Length: 78
Image (cartoon, rainbow, N blue to C red; front, top):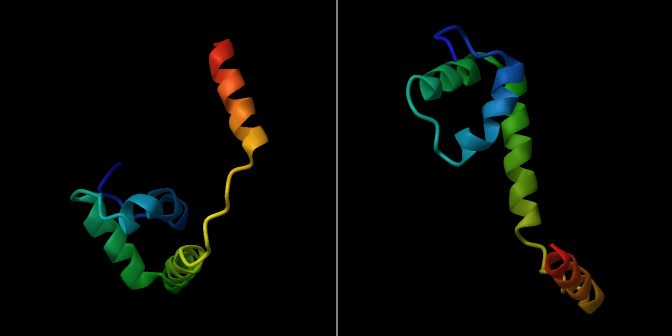
């Protein structure tokens, strides 16, 4: 990635790494500069954070036994 400004499309592609704190320099600075100038991307990241937090409150769903068997069968067939 070049030293040019981050576009909104690039920001969306970098979002997961940004939220997880794994972007290195100079990409991190470029993303933060973009966020300082782009209200749309700030709104987008805020919405993503709210969604992730809400999903984190859901109870885990048990995996049906038939799915366990199907996966085991598929792995055994390989």
